[in-house]
Amino acid sequence: MYEAFLTRMENQGKTHGQIRKTQSDDIMNQTWWDDIQSRVVYLYDYFHDNEPTTNYDRHPEEDPLKIPVDAKFIITQYETLSKDQVEYHLMFRPGQEDPTDYYEEKYHMTWSARFPVGLYVDVPDDDGVFNRWLIVAEQHGNQFIKYSILPCNYFFHWVYKNKLYDMCAVARLRNSYNSGEWTDNITTVVQNQSQVWFPQNSITSNLFYNQRFIIDSRTFDRDTKYESYLAWHTAKVENIFPPGIVKLTLAQDKFDPNKDRFDPTTDYMYADYSAYLSENSHDDDDNTYSKIVFNGRPELRVAGTGMTFTLKFFDKSENEITKIATSSSASDYWSFEIVDKDGTAIATQPAFDSIVTKVNNDVFKIKVTINDINLLGKRFILRGHDIDGTCTSDAILNITSL
Image 1 (cartoon, rainbow, N blue to C red):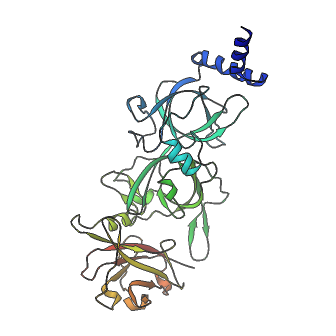
Image 2 (cartoon, helix red, strand yellow; image 1 turned 90 degrees about the vertical axis):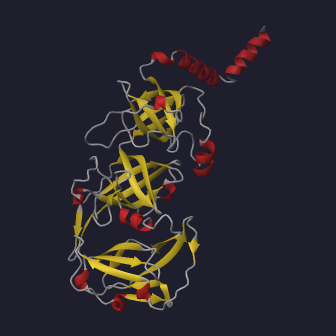
Image 3 (cartoon, rainbow, N blue to C red; image 1 turned 60 degrees about the vertical axis):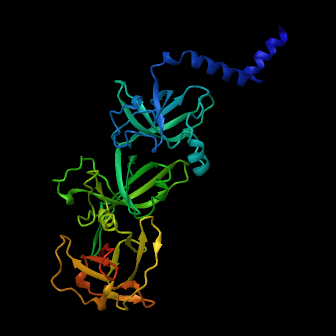
């Protein structure tokens, strides 16, 4: 009997501290549903969600891709108007392990993330309505591990490499102490900043500098004036602390009605949607499409050193195709138009050769140089195509000052 007693005690721990921890876990489990904070929540990642377009009034109990887990929803502080959205804590039952079959491989081994950071969780409110939250950090304590969670409050849409992407994320305040605009003798630029937290995955790992977004609290309406929307571009990327979360600092950008448009199939607004249209406008029966490639922001600077553009051709599998030029004239493969902000073409277009020059005598690679100060504030629409005018793609660039 004494040996059995020792074995039972050793199973609880070899020190008084370990024994108390085991006993606390047992008490926690026995009294779990006596706590008003206890509830069933549902864990999942971006790729395991049958309700990808909503943040509120969700129905995870009907989604077989989501995993129910017992947890406590803990209020650690209260929100005030002088601060950003405060964090809340989530605590699982003692002994809760990773219930997914994908987190270890896709997130821990790939991004060094620790379960469950970077996962979404649907948490019911006091009325039993489920809302989407993002698990953003791990909080270690002497007794129980807790996790910081933030409510997903926006649905983001963007264009990357010929594809449209949509994802729910957390918008955070970013205090930038400025007037909102900065003006010199020539230009005025906006300076407002904001921050967005995304779950880290194979899609958000490609979000980098100058990626443009449309962020707006309204339900998008085709009848709304486009100019009333706000555009943003990525000015800073933080993706190493904590692993599992991608934090983007966004700087306010000017909405461009020539580039930022609705997609008729999703009915969402996308920044740089014109590039998506130009790259996807080829016929399904056509085996090739073209793309204009350049480095940096879509801007041409007056009296600058110029900007280099390369026309490339691809098959439907996105494999690059080598085209043989049948003409030595760049004007057979390139054309351009300069328009005002409202899309009206300027009365007198500059001569092609005065702006466009070949690079290394390659008709598929050109350099565009703007020297006329009167073109400041206009838009430069560059079009590349095959010799017969097919496989057309566009690049829309703002003409700015140095």
